Image (cartoon, rainbow, N blue to C red; front, side):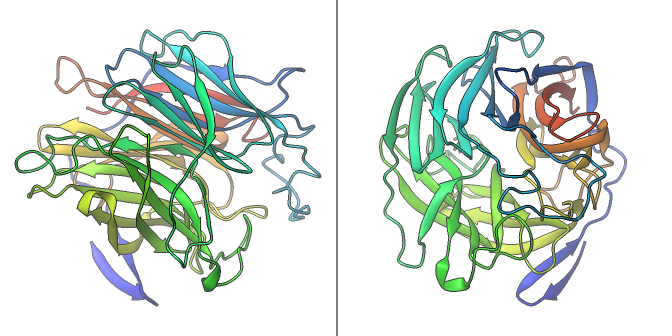
Length: 399
């Protein structure tokens, strides 16, 4: 790939990988698991995670009590006041969960985890099986399940000491990771550490910018826990003007773990994803760049989007799987693609849905060999009229 500089940000012009790159393939039909009703008129911002033993998939979505969930794909350029394209939204709603114990073939009923004026949330599964949800509710509250999502407790405020330059902290939308021991030369340092992407506010950098246009104060950041979510410490920060991010643990040639970060681009050169490399157990991030191979739509209402990134075990270490809209100018055309070189280049995208499509997330379901092809679960907003007509799950192999 070719590197050049725009300001202090490297721009990576990544090519398509050679023959032999895994091609995502759809398995079965799309499953529409969060569909609006009179009681639940809008579902947004999905996330998905697999339990530590791989037996259960947990699919989450935010229910919003609004009259209109999203603007139509062909819409005016008007931006309504603070609503991201929806007039006067009353977003008081709830966080909903559905569980699957058969690899995503069937799904249990809705479970309400929390009700109130909520927004973003991030899901992380610890190596002891505990499932942790950090949820934006005023500040950030912590929910916890020790039985694969059957029951939940918590709601206590998240406590993290922030650096002086950071004036705000809220969850990203998606999932965190647990640091594995077998992706380093020798056991990885900090094995079992929870590393959770968040969204920081750096007020000293300038105004917030909202969901449309440049956001100087936006900053993707990480927090971590070494005691299964009992206590939390502030970690590394991503590229300036980045926002919602996810991370993947990569194969490391040392005992120090390495991570690929992929983030929403709210900078002065939008339209593609921001990336970074993090080390030292998630406490330091650098190698900031913009990946021109990964489209991030810029629309009349929004700059960028929440996309999915997950690591999949492979013979050489880890393949990185990415999901997001393929359109540059609309939240539309959900695609999935694979990188075998830590996100430096990408294979040909697989079209999952042609039509309106928005936020997405990915979970590694399992499989590491030809006999059991590596499988991921994609959860994504989509529809026939708007990108938020429904939330669906699609299973894919990435062999």
